[in-house]
Image: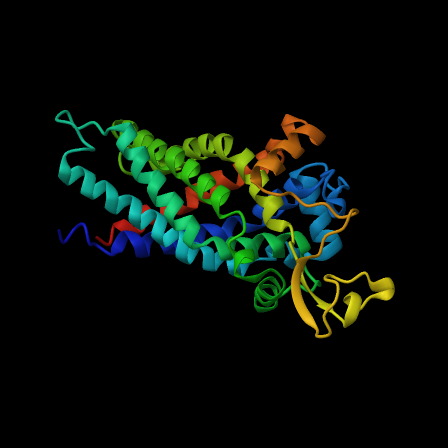
Length: 329
């Protein structure tokens, strides 16, 4: 049982995740910008500002400065310190438990793909749900870039908390957990599978880790991009709550058009700041339907290229770092 309670997969997973995040974050910023543009229902993001990943990278760096490409890096690092640590530590711990129980590896030494995927799914969903507030902060800061009211981590956190409450920090936690579960269910088993089958050719070396992680990133990018587009769009939305007061008899407004008629005291009520000219997605399913209806099915794959381009190096940096840290075992 000492091995099952081993802390090292958690620590190594967190360190490797943070290292990979720093190395690939500008690509993630271009992905986020591409995913939110061209929306018909969100009037603040109808314009198609960028033609692709390279164009987005060049325009952001030219118009907002290179530092804008790293807007949201600190919540991203905080996210990896929680999400990455829990995800990879839990995954490898569950695999150890499954192996001891005889569920994962058969007598011939082959791993059960479904058991492996199950361990990855649980690890991905649980870790992402816990780390969801850091994901919301990251997306908001990436979208708004440098020089806005959301420029600082503390200021962005305060604005979300004050105007949207605690629920705002756990916005779209369902799709976030689903995305993480899909990525983990594809990425981790594929990496382990490729690494195992390339062992005879390359051994347990950097070349093996490089090829295996690159293949794993392609599968996870294909499977997760549609969920990521929906998640990013809903996460970026502000469902602001305003304090509306009833000012005296008749509701206190001109012509008596208050919240509630009668009553002489001021009564506070919280109401969403919406109007006929401002539309928001009511949820993830509504966002998916509206996106496909207004922009076509291909819109669900906006940002696919930077997603894959980022996942490839991210996984390569992560797994090589993780494997090197394992040498300390």
